[in-house]
Length: 260
Image (tube, rainbow, N blue to C red; front, side):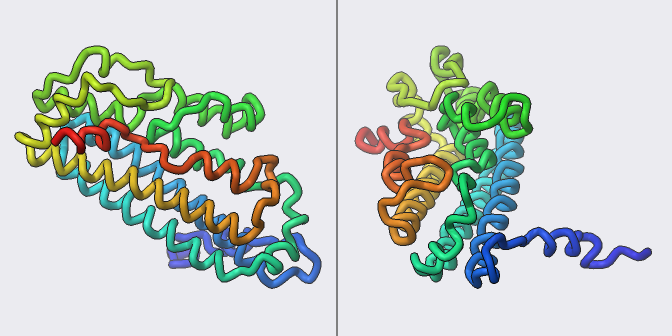
């Protein structure tokens, strides 16, 4: 049988995956399912691109790294704009089927946790939400042990002739990325003398800011939809999400701006 658009994309399987659970079903449950399934597909692509970005940074390929970062940044903009669609659903429309979600919640998205780990926001306690031996737990264990995007960038700096301090390169990659003042003179020199790497730094700042924007819009969407109610997955809802705001992924790139 000849390959077709439908068979290549496996549309029969894809379009059968939206299965509302509410009686009727409630009209807006289909939108809710589609939005979150699309999010998970984009999360898969972001992870695909971040893994490639680490690879090309390891090769010292600054142009390809810039290109890949631009793609991730563009995807982040799409993720933020999808919230606009979700916000067309009123609180009452969401409450009409919310109880059907039981303990299910976006809080449990292991792919989003993988993205956090890959970007340096590592919290071993996040693994406790997933059954040991499950695919989610195994994938997060691997991400926890792997160097982050920031670590790949630091190695790239060293390969480009910048004297990155040994203690910076030897940091424990299972820990969250934190500020390392000994790196600041190197980053300042990059900004003043290495335009190509400086642009790479600026795209990392764009990425950091894009993730912050996503988190902020997500918090406001939750507040707008369920107010102060607890999340369906056992989280505190909006109060928990607010604790994730203004947490830079690459703090050194922000701190040096007062020194330039």
